[in-house]
Image (cartoon, rainbow, N blue to C red):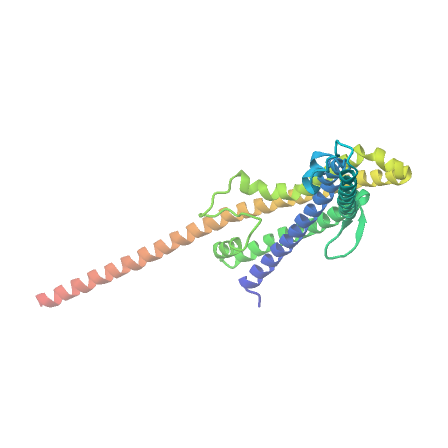
Length: 306
């Protein structure tokens, strides 16, 4: 036979599934954001390459030292020494510039996906990131739907068993991203909307990715105009899909908040009724004891008179 613990475990598992997908979504946002920074035209590494291309620039000299000074007199020995030092300086500059260019190509033009071990071109960031966001948001939407259903069923069964307040308290202690109303905490706007803003992060981030791709489409057309047009079209479709799923997810999050608020009021009313019933019972028991004591005193006084 099922008891209240079974419903408590099932509802807690639904919350855990939502948290797992949420954490995965945060990791995906970090990876896409890092790829977006590396692909920008004002990226630090690209600016560093521009400065290192000048062998006599201040930034270059800060890395490999100052270039040798050309002798002013016509001493052949000093001029030969100057040529050797100049050759060494140029070799250091070429080695530094080559290393920086190799690092830029390996880390900025190609994105490596951790755990999975594959790489893709940075121009496909919008396609790969959009597909990842859409899949994760769909999973989040299903997890939230199951959590809503589990909350409704579990609270209803706990109410039938007369343990609504106890069930509410134990389940609220297991929540992380959802903040149920309790006596110990006051839910302000920050606690209510911070998780919703977190779930909207993929939409905002992917909007920036799509905007950046449109701004830099001219560079993609130099490589392949057809590929660039197809890529931008797919990104627009993915952006619409991400927007729709995000709205669905936030709607279900609001639904979860309302369920918690409604059952908090119900559990409070049940708790107040139980307290009243206990007080009435204690009063009745105390009254019966007082009446019994009075009767005993009256009987004892009659016996004393006899």
